[in-house]
Image (cartoon, rainbow, N blue to C red; front, side, top):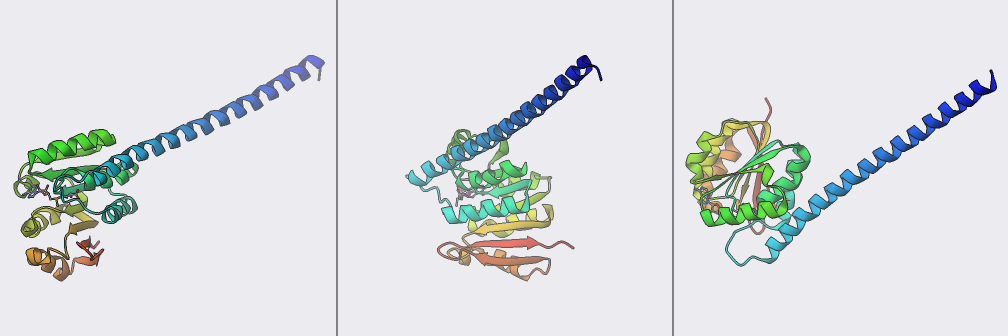
Length: 226
Ligand SMILES: C[S@@+](CC[C@H](N)C(=O)[O-])C[C@H]1O[C@@H](n2cnc3c(N)ncnc32)[C@H](O)[C@@H]1O
């Protein structure tokens, strides 16, 4: 091999090594940047939730942090793509679902009848940076849910207690096999939803467990796969 050829070969090898090193550094950087962006996005959401917990001036009837954590875990663990909520209030539980939905690539449809609560919720969604994940349906959910067409991965019921059975009956066909139906206040307000409790415990196509029984209670019902 001539000296010139040897020099050329050495130059090409050195250039390749530099290119690999630069490439690694660039991809390391982009991984670091995207995980930093994720941490920032989550921190922003958590700080809005903290503000909402601290600032409970009005009767918003929000779930507790522990209950919210359960909603988040179930959503993330099932990889839910579509969560339907009945009873948004100021959006506390919706935001907890969204903490998981932003990682599953999912979205949320939430129903609320009270315009004042809707305006508070949409303000909170903006602050948390999750408005793009949420569709708020305004009006009486008993009527509005009949317009839903898309399959549901998680149905969460937390509105008028006597209406749970009606929401459940109307939406069960849309819950996909393997999907979940969650309901709040299954301990403290059980007397107002006896028909619902019978329906989720007597139907052989469903499997139900009652969790976080004190003080409010949250039922978790699986629509079994066939
Ligand atoms: C217990 S709060 C929901 C709390 C919320 N899930 C949270 O934890 O942040 C119940 C909400 O359901 C709403 N609601 C009651 N009846 C309704 C109906 N028929 N249609 C839609 N929303 C209703 C109420 O206005 C109230 O804001």
